[in-house]
Image 1: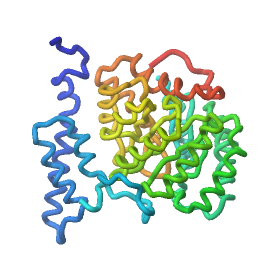
Image 2: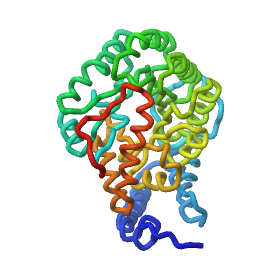
Image 3: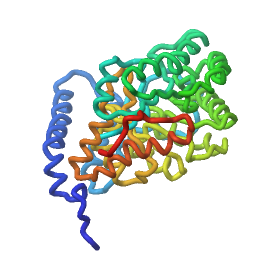
Image 4: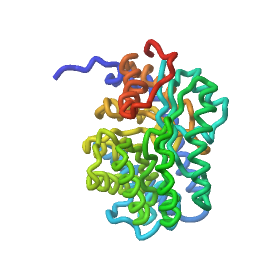
Length: 95
Length: 273
């Protein structure tokens, strides 16, 4: 197997480029969950789906972004009888 | 750097945005019809909007030396009212021969309802009958995956030529099926709700880059009219070649949009990235 030469396929170059940003975003997620812990109330479907997606980050399998997006998606196939709202929440409400 | 902004709602933007885009290298802008942030009351509201897209906004853009093109439709957020939607569909042919009209768009689905599907099918029918290009909006967030599947079914059943249809707002869970069906795919660069520059470039690196384009879809919401050139800079930071960047942000949209004979870029274009 040949080693790719392009800079965008080199792990050390990509680490230099994106590590600090990823580090900051991971801390933001951690701080968000801590904030939720300090707040009164219970998780709605958005928080439940977010917590469930965290396990996909560390399960050792690839395609994390695709699998997380799929996990938040409406799994039904047939068109809805009507559009009762115009907006979307970020996660399927029945999750 | 030169680039085409293939999806921008310029009626919502300021003249400063035009200056910034042209300064950054924009050589043509394309504006799909969309939801105004509120439901319009009658077909007359759409007639005025279509005049704005085909007469007024091209004149505004021309002051900055920027060719402006548009797509026409009633968007899926207003398609639940079948009576209004049919009224709007009936006036689209009045505007189809305006010189800056690329085709029908951005049509598609929002909440994946039966009425939305019905009006989407009617739009596709108009595009096929008039041999026009199609620009498809896929739903937001949790509705995108299901909506993309429904949209692909409608297009397949209608016998649409895939190479003349661009399906927009793809993300990691929809890009493969759109490209596998032979369509073009658009990646929208939004700060939160669609793709970031880094994720967009990841998709470009993994999939058929020759049938992908990038757009800002800038409108009255949280969006950035300079998202495309900023993503080009991000590609350069990753080490992509100037030729590859130019192909993605200029060459690809040029190839798709040039299927409409009236499409032109600014005549001051020269060189590459």
